[in-house]
Length: 80
Image 1 (tube, one colour):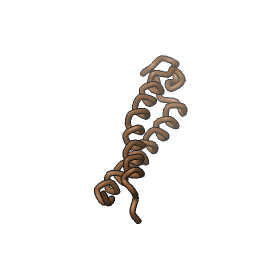
Image 2: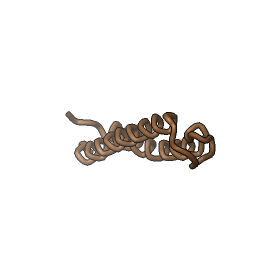
Image 3: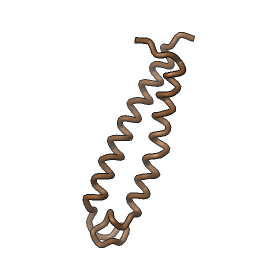
Image 4: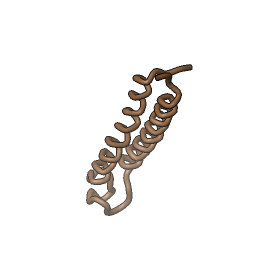
């Protein structure tokens, strides 16, 4: 299968976008009082709210990384 350079660039952009957006979202979740059992950021034990979002963020970063790597590999092999 051959992917054009345009689609390769799109895949790379999706990978970069993932790494720009999700870590910032992770910080927002970390600072949310709903993430902590006491309602105070960093105090008490993490709640299900934090764990579910942490899993979502981790999965998205893994998928975004895979998409970006595929885009880079396709870019290198695409005809000019």
